[in-house]
Image 1: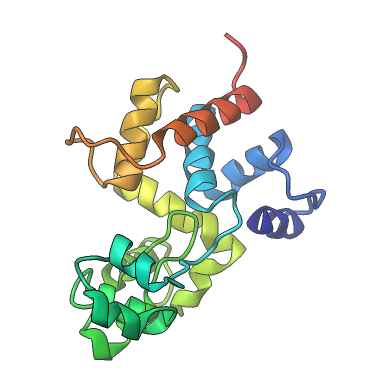
Image 2: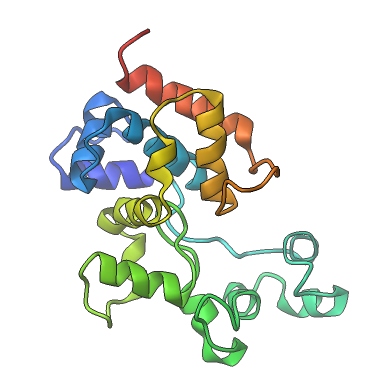
Length: 214
């Protein structure tokens, strides 16, 4: 839990990489989450999205097979062979001409690749986050990978996508809607979000840690 250790070090907590109650509550205080049940959902979703608080930026080190499976819209067999394992080139191709990014040659795809607890991606989203966080427009996107912005950028997503309105309880129906907003960007769908079972388990874990027993 690399990001948890970094957070603990920055907030004078015992550095053990474990999200115990003290660390969880300190994370809530640091981002201004005052409702404990909101914090439960917040931590559960970030835990999942960051592979246990270990990943702070997107890994695009895809094989030929990985590119064809994940980014099949952008790569045929020949182009996948040319791009495989080249993370910068992959990002520039798959994120070109969307989310405010320029074309492939602009380098925006790599510059604004996924970072932070919820994997903030795309120039528009970065600029919106910098404005929301009252940071200078010329702030380096790399900062979103650090401990402070790891959690703050996730809060930005929760706040600006109205996720907290679905966080009042930890029942399965609430976890489903929160997970849909995080993974699919909408609750207006019948599609199930990826790894819903794990998201439910993690929500139950943080509920047991932070909420009083029923």
